[in-house]
Image (cartoon, rainbow, N blue to C red; front, side, top):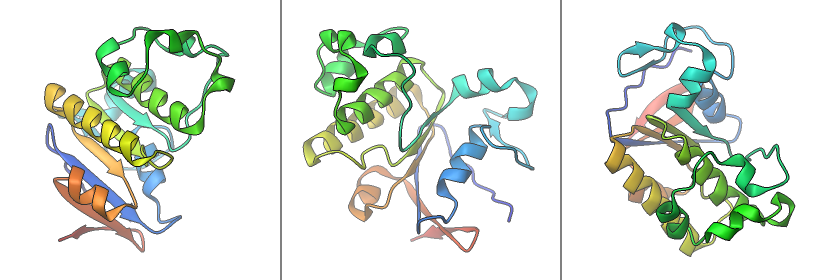
Length: 184
């Protein structure tokens, strides 16, 4: 079923729904990772008007489970924003760590930092705090809020946590039976 959803610059829209409802698929389609019909735009520029790497550089997706292609953390970063790293409780020497040394929560936070280091114009976040303790959830939420405000980046955030949704979102939608419905 077709989905029409507009997210304004700097707005955070949360998306929820049962498992297998299609939340991740919708993010993957917007990121141009899966074949799709229809149109996706960023700043009135169609996804189809640019090649996939260009689009994905502007529409950054953080998957629920991040991928690591090199053994050393620092190899995954072009540049390190030390302020953002400190905000998520990392020191620069973490860049020299082996990825295998990282906990699930450290991988999740570093994957977010890796995504933000590319300075995408829009963020697609698939449960970015699912494996984090409450203190790190708060840190990640604040970092995303800071990025969103500083860059006027629209954010589409998948979450199952109702309290989180009320904290971070301007609007909330739920996928039900293939339809995207507003939650009041």
